[in-house]
Image (cartoon, rainbow, N blue to C red; front, side, top):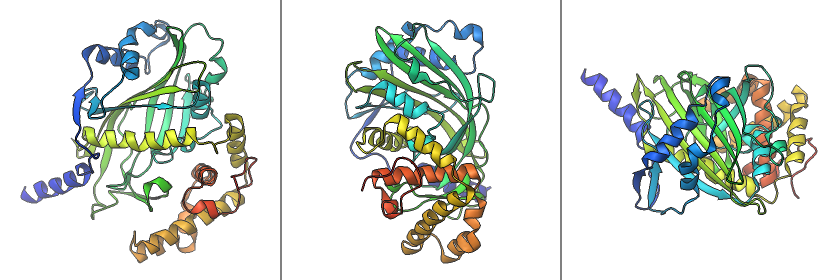
Length: 394
């Protein structure tokens, strides 16, 4: 019993001892009328056609008023627990119009790694409206729709390793997206629920500064740090609400807000705290805002075309780009002693890591390399240009 307790405490320390944000901040739960609005939104995830027709934007008026209201920098808001999962909240503005943000974020030709490189390894839609088909082109309807447009689907997700434990997870999300008008302004909302626990957590590694978006995925179960390779951890439950609110139709300015609930850990014990979720939201928000506001980011049509070009590359072309990427990862790992030499040798010997990647994983990795070239991030600003239609700046 004493040994089991000790092991549990060690795992607890690994999963919960993440650094807190700098500065003194207090936490505060959102008011009850906002909680009611959030539950109303989540009720549309996986709902049947009859209930979807009844969406009423006025039911979430307090939520929309809350996300656009001024807030103190000393307060971190949350939305309480949902299915025993703690929550966190974050909002920020993006200097880009709603149409472009929705197009870049939800165009089926643009992979999620383009907008969320530090949060998502890859995503794919298993079904949309119960069929294996791509998402509709929401942005094309923003200027001419009169009633809410509601689309449901199931999205398969693989996230990135976190900086502390190095663990990553693979899971499905039921997702519902709604485009609607609220008092003359356009709003796009994406809600998700995790229907089942994730696959067992696997060992990953953040290579270099997290801002460089360099990650290794071992494919081996366990926690990547502190000798806890034997730990079988899971994401047991998660839900999320993302809101894109058009601040002014005449200016490139959109309010972005996200509510997130997560329950994850080991042997059914939840090790996630509100501070962990908040740190994850800050990690995502910093990159999302930087990418979308970058003057070097191609327009959405060109970006989609370039990503389509990547998908049209042959296996040999993909392997060539990914091979160069992995060479730089290997150099950094050896230089900074991120892994034992024997482990690096095992991963990279005879192109073992490269050969383990599926075509979908290679395509997303090349899309990440392309993004890094555009923004001049990390090692890839020195790699040769990719064979796509939009080249990085000289």
